[in-house]
Structure formats: structure tokens, C-alpha cells
Image 1 (cartoon, one colour):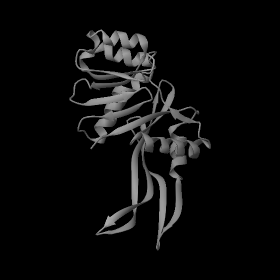
Image 2: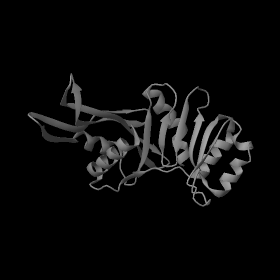
Image 3: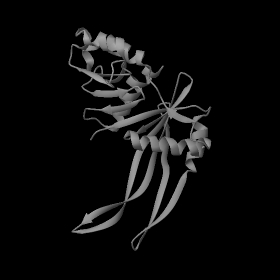
Image 4: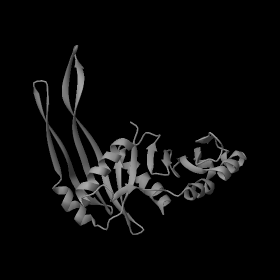
Length: 227
């Protein structure tokens, strides 16, 4: 199973206690009728738990999908879930949503409105391109892929370098002089895990691992890049 996550920064001053108190009351119920069937769709956060200095929860959202049941298309209820956790680092509070980036954006928007009554208090976290550069150059053998963007080449949006000799090809220095590192794929030190991370903090695992391991790698390897 492919694991992915996106990290957001909370711009408003808050605490884990305040967040937990507000999320315990978070439950949105919507009623939809599909044909002759009435559906109750629930969006909520459950399983709040403070552990390892982080506040964890499970965000759930119901939706109606149509499936083929022996030649007949019928509506059924599907629940999409995502582990979410709040983490403090360098006097900042971050929200991480363990799901694909589109659902993660939805979760961040909903939680921003519920926690702070606006859609501007939870925003995309950012990794400075120079931090990705330093991370690669400190251990170039671990890098699998680098994508560059913000290029000043006419008509070129992104370029990529692959292979173990990225830093010694000459192309690395050339592309760095004309653009910024947007995406890095690397091996996690001391493991067989391979992660990909973008400057706007989308993280993807390219290795088989549990969600708990994935979260551990994200906290240990990606969070330091944001400082």
C-alpha cells in the first residue's frame, strides 16, 4: 500500500489542549437521498490521543459512491479515513494528514474552519529549497531522484536527474544555477525505506512499511528540513 502525507503549518497560536477540546466536539452530519435510499453522512474526528509529544486523531468522512452489484449500479456508503497528528517544532505547530494530497488539503481546510473559524489559519508548510540542497549534498549517495523547478530556461518548467552520481554529473550544478530543487527522492539512513518529499511538504513512501513506521520517518527526516 502506497503511503502519503502532507504537512501544514498552523499560523494561529494554540495548544494541544485547545485543539483536543475543540476536536472532541467536531461532528458534521449531512443527509443525502440517492434513489430510494436515505444516507446519513458523517464527518468527524475520533481516537484523540496524546503520545510521544504529539496529538493524534482519526479524521473520517463519509461519501456515497456507486458500485456494480451483479449488473445493477447501486449507491453505497464509503468512509474515507486519515490519521492526523499535531506536532510542535521550533515554536511552530504543524498538522500532518496521512492521506493523498487532495484529501489532505480538504482535511486542513475543514479543520482550519472548525478550530479557528476561518480558512487561513492552516496553510501549506514549506521546505526551503536550500535545505533540500543541503540534505542531498550531505549524503548524495542516498539520493535517487531530483526534480528542479523555477527554471529560467525558456519553455521548460521542470527537469529531473536520476541515478547515484547526481552530484558529480555537472548537470546538477547547471540545473541548480538555473532553478531550485522542488522534489527529492532519497533512502532513509539506516533503513531500506525510500521517501519522496516536495517543497510544499507532500511526502510519499516508495517502500513497504507500516503507517507507524512512515510517521516515524516523516518526523525524523522531513520535519527538520522545514527549519
